Image (cartoon, rainbow, N blue to C red; front, side):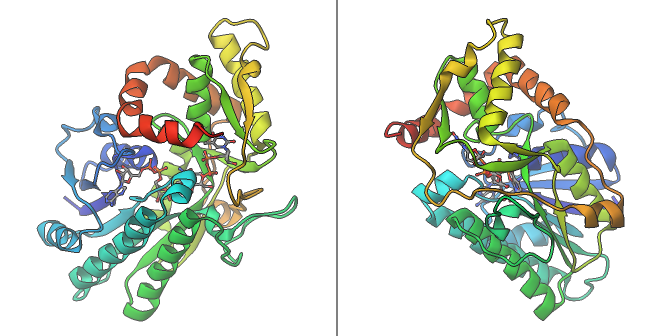
Length: 351
Ligand code: NAD
Ligand code: DAU
């Protein structure tokens, strides 16, 4: 094996696409997926590659520093791609503590283990931290987030991610740990937990349930197909410059309400419903507290320096995503049972 790489959060939405890509593209690597399997972690996402000889799963809570140290001494990792996180803004508003534990303490535990494991020979090692555009705060109608935009996080989620970004840079500056950070815009695609806007809307439309639109639906997000994020992570991990930050985005801004109207029309067609049927499910609800107005990423550094570009047109990516959810009903049923059912009732009962 040429390299042993720890991918944290590999059972989650983006992590599972990254694990699959690395297991398929790099048979000479040993890929270790370290995941706690919270409500958002689902090993079913990886059933197609779970028996590969270059793949291992390790159930681990990154908040448990002893367990993290034991994992590092078991595998002697050459690289870490760190995706494990609490990732949903609404959950960070109803319960911020878990975000502090996992996103901040968990990241420090990984950094400490990488530091002691790599202290003799840091050459060729890489700690790659996956972050979000939300650390930059909220944009007005104009402008884009660049790698130089000052941090201004507004939610407990984005504040915990900003904190972890600062710690990663500080460990590089103070202890010389080789690190890279990327900050990405909103992802969509197969396997996303249906608490996030796109899969939630698809699932509700399919089941004739109200589509909750926060506020007036005028907030803007920059959407990127999840496999494009995975391809960017692959490129940055292999070709990115240590110590650098790269922004990743789709150059694909959509007002929430326009995106939901588009989804309604796609689903009317696919479900053979009369035009305009699904739109009637749109229900305006109380806004998210502190709701960021607009995110939009300038990814020109990644495009010009490393030659990355996103592939599917949004219409193509969205069709693929809708098709995946419509043909994976069992996956949806299973992830929607248990903990998520209670959370869903709590979130939407008063709205
Ligand atoms: P997700 O919620 O779908 O998955 C998170 C994964 O982390 C799950 O498998 C979960 O079990 C695991 N996890 C959570 N707490 C853990 C702990 N204490 N120890 C070990 N594992 C734990 O998240 P996602 O949407 O796939 O996001 C992955 C990463 O990408 C996050 O760091 C997120 O901040 C970042 N990101 C997400 C987006 C997006 O649009 N989803 C955009 C930019 C950046
Ligand atoms: O920008 C990157 C971030 O994108 C990631 O770091 C986060 O992990 C990810 O969850 C996502 O955050 P958002 O808050 O932008 O995503 P979400 O899907 O929760 O919401 C998208 C937009 O839709 C946002 O403006 C809130 C709105 N919304 C969301 C839900 C769940 C609604 O109007 N109704 C809803 O029911």
